[in-house]
Image (cartoon, rainbow, N blue to C red; front, top):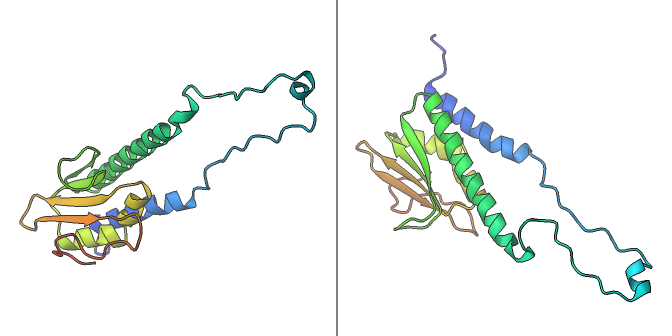
Length: 172
């Protein structure tokens, strides 16, 4: 047991695995309509072709469907992180704030007792900021129930990931 890995090290390895798993996944399938034949029966008879929708929603709701799917992905990611933390003995909870009162939303929020080194490893080795940005989060917040305080990392859509939290209390 002298060389047994600590719970924090195991957590970092699992978080890195979650990030790497998404990178290994292939790109989503893209469907392209087939090219119409040169001489279709519709043109021969003079009938006009009407667009056919195969989905259950009107074609104009594609953005709404994509937003719901991304919201669901964010929720699944937060639940997965919470399970990883609990499995490694870290008493913390992870939630998604989609309709927040203050600050940028959607936000990935961690509640628990965290040390500065734990947060730094989760953000660097665990790649939490990269995955959060990819899922459309605009902020990653750590609310420490202990004496350390709160850390807010605001994610912009463009530019590099933040190196320090919004209050410059912690820099990576």
